[in-house]
Amino acid sequence: MEVKSRAPGKIILSGEHAVVHGSTAVASSIDLYTYVSLRFSAPSSSDNEELLKLVLKDTALEFSWPISRIKEAFPESVALLASTPTSCSVECSKSIAALVEHLNIPEAKIGLASGVSAFLWLYSSIQGFKPATVVINSELPLGSGLGSSAAFCVALAAALLAVTDSVSVDVSQQGWHSFGEKELDLVNKWAFEGEKIIHGKPSGIDNTVSAYGNIISFKSGKLTQMKSNVSLKMLITNTKVGRNTKALVAGVSERMLRHPDAMAFVFSAVDSISKELTTALQSPIPDSLPALSVTQIEEKVEELMEMNQGLLQSMGVSHTTIETVLRTTLKYKLASKLTGAGGGGCVLTLLPTLLSSNVVDKVIAELESNGFQCFIAGIGGNGVEISFEHSS
Image (cartoon, helix red, strand yellow):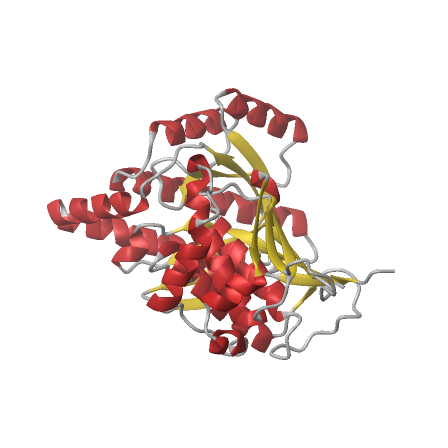
């Protein structure tokens, strides 16, 4: 049997940076996914060494470890943790570092090492020392602020937990299906442990959005889940410019120290925008005039996005590539804003329901001519899902 899982990426619709200073932020899942396939190997009756294999299809890399080495690296107790999400200890971190070090990951791909480390911890903790092949592929660009590492951790935790006694799932079901609330909570907690290995001190927002899907508003550490009543589509433009999130966050804090009164008004305005946005997304759609109502909501969201972008510019987190995207989309009367840390990364552009596909094609062609990468994604969809494929 092969277990498959998929977990969505995320975007910040409003409130990035301001959330650090007490404002409300709003995040949403997007229907771009990271996929995990898990297949256990049959017990070896020959002298062939049993292996744990990790295949990263997008980077054409494959890693493997003899199960005997995995057993040496971890204490037996690690393999009994499936129902109890546990942080990787300093001792286990050293053992994982040794397992990763011998892989000789190419210098250009060295950023993958933390993801491989998270894989080893999650696999050994949830599945123990079983030989298997795990294949990862993703529609999410790495390091662009779309939650690729969280989607990886969530999809991995889901696939690993789906074949344990810690969760209750019907393996005979066809197609993609969701976990129950209790199971989702366990998946999310394990994914957060993986995120901690990759990022050190993650907020937990990315993995929560990926696990549960839909839309989440968050303020001062409190997360509120909600469902949108309108299906919005976004054009996501990846500027391919890497950004230093810590430096950008520090820059906003320094500006706050220099201009406390003005920045307090900026953060307060962002808070109001986030609250208005959640109200708009949850607006009931009347049966009598659904198209008109959706258009009105889209127009409101466009205005809120434009205002939020102006405030982000006043925080000093825009970038020349972001401004290029804004100018390009504005030519077609479309509203855009950066998403995430800024300083590069990705830009969101709302694609109204009544916008012709011809205009969308023109916008994408112009953006791609600048060397940018474009995706179209729906927002606020399902969180992590699993499916089971039985050999015939």
